[in-house]
Structure formats: C-alpha cells, structure tokens
Amino acid sequence: RCFNTISGDIIPSYSLLYTDVSTASQNAAELCVAMRDGIARGYDDGSFKPNRAVNFDEASKILSRAYALVSDKDTMLQDPWFKPYVQAMAKHNAIPTSVTSFSHRMKRTESLDMIVRISEGITWKPSLSYAELQKLSTKSIRMSVAPRMSVQPANGAASSSSSSKSPWYKFF
Image 1 (spheres, one colour):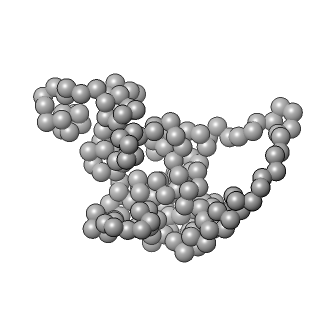
Image 2: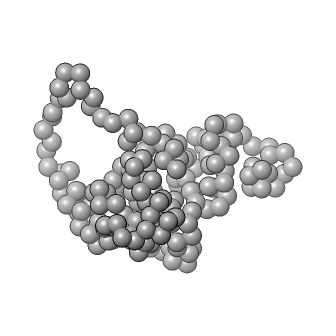
C-alpha cells in the first residue's frame, strides 16, 4: 500500500518511483517504503541506480536511517554529508575492520555484519572509528593517484567477485 500512501490517490497515477525505477519493477514496493520513510532518497538527478553496488558511506546512511540512529537535526548542513551516519555506525561499533574507505564497495558479508551488530546490540566486535576511517580514506586516495600496474588474471581465473556487484537492496 506504499504507492497509495505517497501518491494520496486511491489508485496511483504514476509509473516511476525514480527516473530509473518503474513502479512495476520487482523491488518497487521495498524501494517505495525506503523512499517514503526517508531511508533512501536517491540521487540529485532523480535516479536511484538500483544496479549499482553500494558504498560504505551510502550503507551507513541507509542503516542509520533504518534503525533511527540519527535525527534529521543531526544531519543538517554536515560536511561531508555522510559524517553523521558514519559517526553513528562508529558509536554502535558497527564498522567492520574490512572497510577500507568511505567509498569502500560493500560486500554482502560486511552489510550483514553491520545489520547484526546494530540489531543485536553487539559492541564487543572490533570496529573502526570515524577518524580511523578518515585516515584510511586519505591513504586510499593517495594510493589511487599512483600509476597502476596492469595484472591479468591467470588462465581461467575470475577477475572479480560477483558478490561485490550486487545492487545495494539485495544486501538486506
């Protein structure tokens, strides 16, 4: 019933949630709830990019909003935009030590780990702080500026993991 809630009509008269997501798509109902409840807003251009892998900063925002770890007041005029969400994750010891930067591409196991830590109140696992992640991100930026050597995978070896290419909403 989310479509009726956001449209105000008895029968919704629109066909797109975002410029790139149809109301008839497989995950339309879940995305509608995420949009309606302020968990995910999409990008400035009106798109959602449902097939793009989620980064750590985006996952922090989604989880912080889903679990009500931050208020709208806490997030107003923050620079960078993700700082209050990452700080909320750090406060709840929910940043896996495998995360290497704010723009780290999340794996399913990392996303699940964050969800379990928050929902079960697990605080004994090692977690990164905002400052530690900021240092890692700075180091990562410096390393990405250096010229990369091209390494070809061995015969028959996979060049990348399929789990890192899943859309963000399939992590939850």
